[in-house]
Image (tube, rainbow, N blue to C red):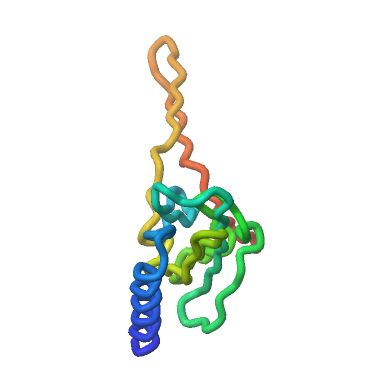
Length: 151
């Protein structure tokens, strides 16, 4: 519990410091559908051309932040962290910083994310096959990147 409070305090301080020092990067949050976990962030409307973003993540309780290799110096305001957050019972954090010639920010931290509780499960695919006296329904669950380990 003490570690949780320390992490939340650090993220709050970083978020507050970033808000005061940066005019180009705002809210960072996870968005999850069918356990596809995407980190998104908002930027100011007048973000300078050539601004790039760096993304890091970590599992709750870990001290070191890890770079998401595919999300370093990117221009789009999102990063797919599905593989890095695949243990759906764990909690995760992510953070983003913006860098350009005219605008830069400190790291802006997401709130704690738990895929199991926060993902939105999509609707199943329903197919029907009419027959003379009946209808056959085939129901397929939505695709998820979760793997089933076969032993």
